[in-house]
Image (cartoon, rainbow, N blue to C red):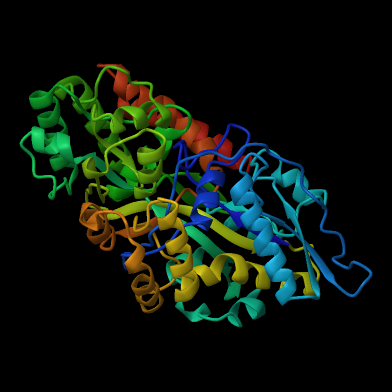
Length: 489
């Protein structure tokens, strides 16, 4: 069985519904994305910021035999009925795959990843053959022996050697390969170029450090009256962004403690410094506005309307900025995440894994499907160009940077093929491309990331709403809570 995997926190381009995993929508949109102008660690994606609906039922992979000599695998990834065009496109790909591989039968499923039910599905043998899961999950799945060693099948794939080793490290254990990447993202800083200019700032020189970030936010507020920076603090968004800021400051959220993970954010002052910064911006600079209980859906429309100068997010939000919130393309800017001593940013994404319950024939069929549907468009210039042409014809953004799963030798070929169809102002994304290429890419906390983010939300809220907030005490309390969560994982 193939398991696909996604991670992250509340963001309308990342989160779907409370019942479905945060990155179901991102995965769907990335499948129809094109690439160009990638970082040494970045790929261009199309993301409209829409969510998937309908958390459907999963199928049982069974033995994989159909009685007619065919191997049967059920695959997640089928868009819901409410997305008629993309659903039909997926079904067309299934038909194309089956025609090219007549001994394999595909049973598509529109059941998205659901963190609440996944464990029970796996234990009960009810999981699809091809599943989608977040980048936070592989360590636990490997430890619990729920996913199969696919080393032989993976290493036989075209361009396998060009897959980014930083990503593959999260999918490997003891020299064995347990999964393959599908799509990745890295958090950065989105900013309104028009507000920067109105505040007397250079739109081509966004802040690179937290000190510059704070100063720019204050200048935007003081000179334009608008919100300099809008932090998230609810729906796990506060903990998610605090994690990214902690990484940038050189800290960690979780650490290894024996055979379990434990809270690591009270080791050193990286997390406390991030909270001190938010507290000072709120109570000394008054640059964060008045609403301190924001989620992504609160920030996105105001940002598009030019009422917010900066937000932490990925460039893939550009699609929803244009289509959903009617923002102006010329005002959108993207930069790398501002840095402290860590020189790092948070990455997440979707990966593909194979269930330990799969037969040898199913494993082989599953990896073949993974390569056909998800990997080949990322390394084959002809397929990438065809997708880019179609997306450009549909007036979808082509040329928005993200993270590639392949190295520069592959990326360069795909970029060249896609370049004629790029329809965004690539210069407005160049600060993100150049800056993120220099950063360490750190995955989300490996165990219980969403629960950990939820435990950190109240700490962020306190820093933003209490002038006398005792940040060390708040972190100590949260550390105990997180330790309790992680002990149960």
